[in-house]
Length: 141
Image (cartoon, rainbow, N blue to C red; front, side):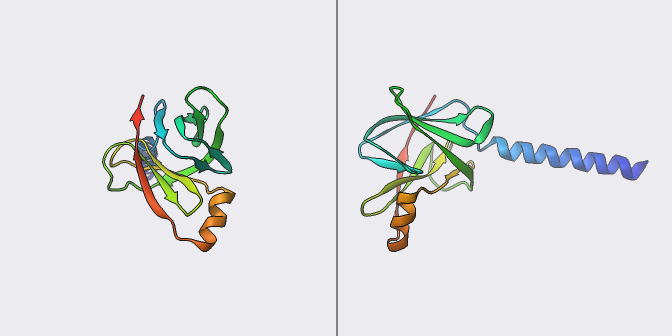
């Protein structure tokens, strides 16, 4: 009886720990940002303008990026990203000669974020170039 109880306690503790760590990487509502130049997400290129990032309902590891004025956007697969040293909520772009690709989303400082799946434009650029990182702060709602 005692070994069974110990296993249940360990199992519950494991689930609690897993749930706690996953919750840090979640976007609660949406993140707003403004770009002064075109950028790509997955296989979609966006013009300069205001945009919203929000989780897809029912799947916290898929993000939707849409224009703030409601124009269609893109859904992209995301993976957990380790916290970085930047302060505040921010985005990280990979900058190549002809491509500026949204790479990571950090909803809050010091917490885990999202690593976005690469699209074809970035994959092609990465074959011949090493990107530089461009960090853009953002506002949360």
